Picture 1 (cartoon, rainbow, N blue to C red):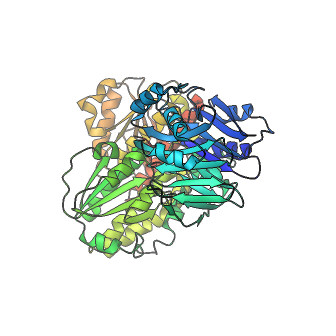
Picture 2 (cartoon, rainbow, N blue to C red; picture 1 turned 180 degrees about the vertical axis):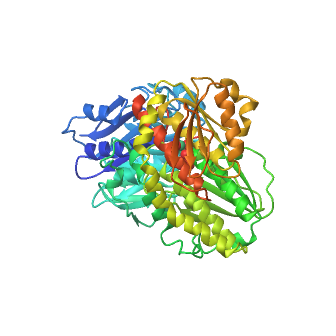
Picture 3 (cartoon, rainbow, N blue to C red; picture 1 turned 90 degrees about the vertical axis):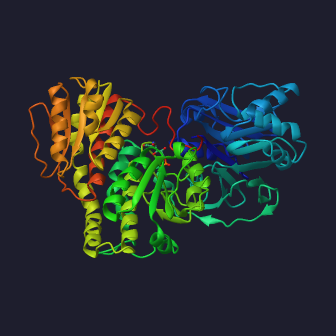
Length: 606
Ligand code: M6R
């Protein structure tokens, strides 16, 4: 979603801001803009489309030592140059904003009555005018007064003309970090934007304000009380935001999965078991008493939760519910005693997932666990137990390595809980062995790339596709369908194969590709019957068949043989060819793979 960058330095900052925006492109956006104070005057550049289009408009020698910049993902008002941020008020105040102002209508009415003129359809513009209405010479005081009237979840960056230049920012429900440099300081919605200029960051708490000025930076809490926060030195390098030899980030991230899973396992297992306390020192007490697990997540992370439910119930015999966060957060729920609340999230800042965690009110929860890929993200900071997936930065909007490392993390959770509840040691050792083998098996499956690239040609002109699965492969079918629709824009649906004849079979004809993953398990025969139902209606099958899965093949079927035996980790393996298929179909259809239309990487608004 929207990205914010801001800088106050002793050098000109436009190139720092543009590079920052480029590094935030992965979050998803439709327009971009930048405002700079040059010789006491606000100057603004905005463009619909990519950051490159904005860059083309900013003179190479643009002067100005203080500025803010933004990538916008439209919520209020269509994507257009006039709706792009920064928004100005009376050429004195410039504002960039991530999030939503819920009470913007009433504020707008009051401001109109006070004589302010509006140039855009955005909720953001009210913030600029409201601040301007309070601004005399203390920008922080004016921002504080304005923010106290705003409702919603947001973060802001503000600059103003005046005698003593300052940049004020605040965080209310949407992430914001301060980058600490040498005689220069920055703000951004994500550390990746600032990695070329600093590796020292201050993570603002909810409600905090920061004021950057010539002397340095000052922090205030939501009540306006000065505060201090620790500086965290990031180990990330700027390089992780480069594609290397790959054509797209998604392609790079698919091929990084063996490495990502190895990183996820390192220091957490030995050859026979999972090490103690990898979920934190308090985990043992929580895992011993829990009697139920509630998983909440969105999108791909939700699919990981669905797979985990099969593992938790089958291996541990503990009941488990999984729900999308946007539903869970608004529902009255019945919480069984000793329920562990688990959130799964790549970004750790998904608004619905975070709200679900924050809204927990029942005393029946015995703890909250976040499985996440971004350290210092709000979900991580606000959960009692944490396991980082260590997938490394995921830039492509389509989640790939984050998903497979989430699944690995969930298996680590299952074993950690099992260890404390008398799960058979040899069973534990056998799952651990499967995990150890996983990176090698993934490398092997990635060799299917060329074969799958050829198969992808069949999908170039397709409008629809159906994915079928049974058991824990049903969520994998859902993930396959999500990947395909997300990046190739082909309408794709997933069904539990047994549901086919209860409706979706009506859609099957020669134009409907049907994609099935066939593990060699006890459901194979049932799955075969469902595949016959497809063939009898002229549908074309694309089968990803596991080792030993004997199929009643016919000449028309496209079968990809996967060199993997059926085991607990099979759903993780089955994901790989489906990711490759979506990727190659999207390449052939010429879509914007890393930043698919209308989508954002971090969904920080509802
Ligand atoms: O950061 P999160 O894992 O919480 O994000 C959840 C979804 O927005 C995300 O998985 C989304 O569905 C992906 N674009 C799917 O590829």
